[in-house]
Length: 400
Image 1 (cartoon, rainbow, N blue to C red):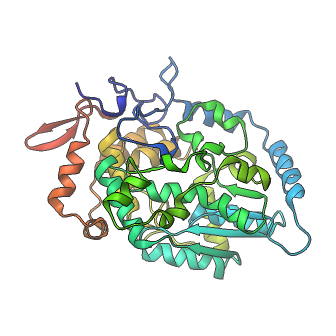
Image 2 (cartoon, rainbow, N blue to C red):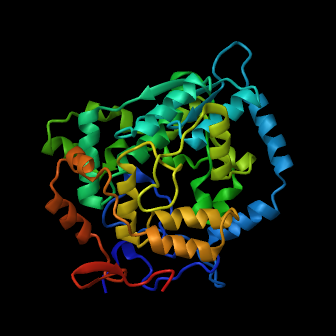
Image 3 (cartoon, one colour):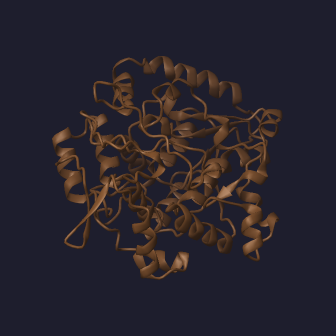
């Protein structure tokens, strides 16, 4: 039986949420290649995933007053009194970055500079929320748009070689905060919640800082896009090495010399995506989408990029988990819905195809429909998918 990425051959669903043991953990994107084994979410012998275990710890054990006091001490350490920026907040103007930057400025008295690594293609509501972030929220922002021709190409090869069209965006999103901190002589970078909350080893949540491996490299020559090194891409195309500068992380000593630290605000303040949405709506008139996000039931999460739905769709293909599985699992842990409700939502929406921006996606990565499905079907693992009546269906489902 073919189980790509060396995923667990037996599919097991968490007894408390609706995530399975196929869910990938966070990896260093610029080291990712097709032959890599994919680390997956941790499950204990009781059949409960570490994301659910951490949520219980988060809800019942952590003293959030103490954590906020830690935050106050941290901010006082980096606070500037000369009018300069004292914290960098990366984000797109979505609910999480709006919450983080706005509360740092207006509740904690910091002077944040927000930095945006541009989406592939802004949605209409995403662009409006991005504008409101500054115009209504009163936040300074720098919108960095990487070389569009190169970014489209990198998205294409990442889709073709890894079925991972969001790889270049994720890489840029992670490195842009520390890079602009260095440019503006700011020593503190603050991201939202730690991605480890949702699937990495539970111990990764014990520290407030991002692991340097996500935004530094000691050997730029080994950086990969779609599994290809930069010099390999240059040989196959007309791109030059210096055009990749904005994608190349600096080495550890560069940030150490500038004393730059990257923290997660979610370590200090109890993070709840729905509460972030309420906060952003109140303070910047953040708008949810005018229709349900395809593949899920939500209207307010990850709605700024037209390519984003294909990130979740390709995740479904590779790991048997669609967007509804992620959204519903998170809301079970935050006690917004029951597991039974989550199972029903996953059954209804998880395998829905994102047709709204399909033609724009094909145009963006410059492939036709036949090539799209050829690539997609090539990444289906035998232990996850089978064909019935000429249609692909999952072998194992949380409802079945």
